[in-house]
Image (cartoon, rainbow, N blue to C red; front, top):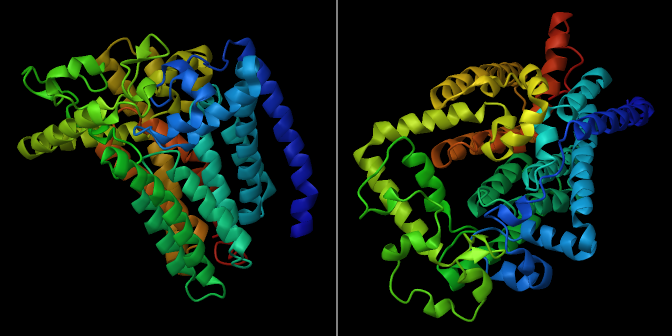
Length: 475
């Protein structure tokens, strides 16, 4: 089987690279290219001057976001100089290609089925969402890459629990936790504990404890740093503002004495009456450019301002009070968010202008009917209908995998990891976020595609009456 994989892996990669080049030339001709202005506009990023000339200090005193992606941006800016647009374009396209190759490699190792493997890899490569997000200067495909790397090393546990495999797995998880605040320290601890419990009886399982503890301690250092400087035991101080967008969605508050009457993520001056007198004093002199300036890049809102720490806490408190008084309203919004989770990834509002450039391809491939909506109500209906195919596919795949696991009383560590991640992201994004859930799903779409490949092989074997014989290697 190893010879089989080696024989076809090279030719399949040639096919993938050829398809990648042709498809990317076509979308470039259609006007789909890197949205470089995100570097200046996105709230998550430090001032460009800070990224270029004061990176480490800026990252250290950043309470709003984990450090990894700002370091990533600043490093490329420093290395590429005036060619930063070209550098980012190449890097993000390279991430897509690496993701595709990794996905192919993992599918081939798990299923030993070349046709299904190539199909799934092309499914990812030619996805309109992949095309759109590789042209968004954001961490979406970057996080997907880290998840695939984690699966790659976790799959090596099947042969032996080596220091290399364990280190690679936890390094990927640690980088995810230090890139996306959604993947909290608690998430890292739970995943590590589950993987150890799964392998607890195997030789070398103690390595999981040792490396896992190192990863947890290293990640916890950032939480401790934020707590000591900003009194926030988190990698982001925006939790209250993010949550309020879901809690108060369709629940307009007109009482101007309440902070929720102001749209979250407004200019810091809009919250002047809600901020304590002299709150800036203890932070003055640390990093005034990023912590005390209302604007960044001279003209855009600076959501890294230290005042948002207080603002976010007040939004969180207001949100808790609202849920107590109007629980049904919140449940409705959670259900809406869960539906949005299964909508096409191209419907993300920030990148919608990009998906319009490949509108009809997106409609056919992603069933994104929102392209034809002209108002809010039509858009809601279109999004709900557009979510149905993806939801049904997910249900079918999970049912197929679950039935196999139930009948054979086995579940691989990789599949267990994927299920943990999927359940976590769906639950947390539905409870705390609104209208970005399709992007959160796309971040972990490569993991779902690993399950899809296995489900397709199982369904094909079932069709030929070979569901129980010769397929133990699949799951």
